[in-house]
Length: 101
Image (cartoon, rainbow, N blue to C red):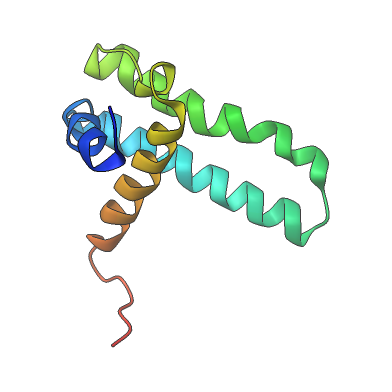
């Protein structure tokens, strides 16, 4: 893949199962919350949890629901960007979300 724009449609195609997407959402939420708490509470020792919280649910989604190999193994940086974009897209579709106009 020569660009993220080329990569992202393939990334979404590898995340079709709704449980896989929900597991990604849960993992990314846990990572962001833990990161925020680690910074706000000045607890850098919590940072070791980030890979477990992020990759654990996502890989369960891939291995048990999608039955494919996570994109992280082939394109780690694009995969991180893809996860964050997918997360933002899922967050923007939540019912009752706050909107700023």
